[in-house]
Image 1: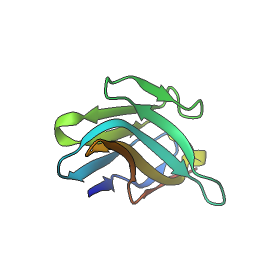
Image 2: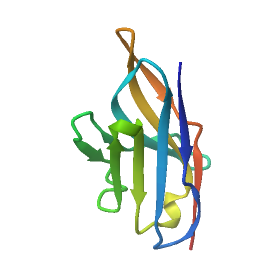
Image 3: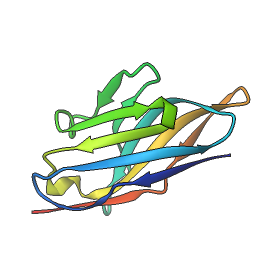
Length: 119
C-alpha cells in the first residue's frame, strides 16, 4: 500500500505565496506522473499541474506563469510553488500520483490541504 501525505496549505493574502508538498510512503513502488488538482467550494475537482518522470511539466491556463510544479524523486515528493495568489485560487488542493507496483499502475490521492486566499 502507498500513502500520500500533503502539507503546506494555509491562509494567505492576495499576491502572496505558498508552497505545498506531497510525499509518498510505502514500499516496493515507483512513481510515474505526479500532479496537483484543486476543488473550490461548490465546484468540481479540476486539474492544475502535472510533472512526468522525465520532469516535463504542464499547467492549466488558470495557474500558468504563477504556479510551479517540481519533484524530488529521492524523497518521493512533489511540490507546488504558488505565487501571485488570487482569491479565486481558494480551494482544497489534492496531489495525485501514478504509482507502479507489481506490474500495474495505480492512482493514489493525498488527503487534501486547504488554501485560502483573502482579498
